[in-house]
Length: 151
Image (cartoon, rainbow, N blue to C red; front, side, top):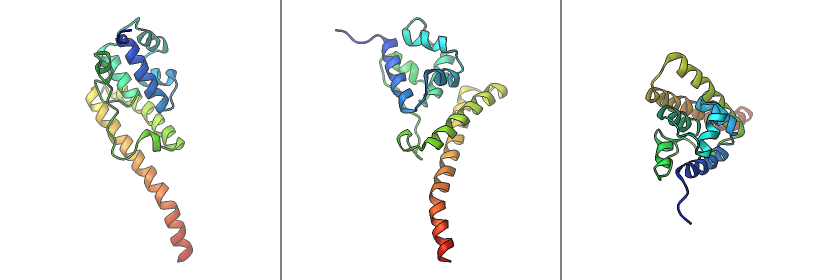
């Protein structure tokens, strides 16, 4: 049997990433700012994503810009480089906070009419700040509690 069709490769890659991020298809569509029906058509191969839709899907799946198009061309997606944490070590609370921030940022991007590059940079900064804050709160609580008891 031959190679899978481009839309089948994309569907498989998106599904794997969606599951890793603990998101539903509807959440992916919402974060990508497309309808669930449009996402389903892309997954089935009934529609090829436009460049804008592909960028929205990249953001919704926490992939580097151009990943959706790379998968369609036979390559592999590139997860957003994140030196502070990975999806596997995120707590459910942090995952939920990041999902909320992503939705709020999507609305802000539309309202401010940011370019995709500006939106990507804002998302990287927001995500890093949320993760750093979460780590510092996670690490500070036991230390402060012990110091308080000792002092």
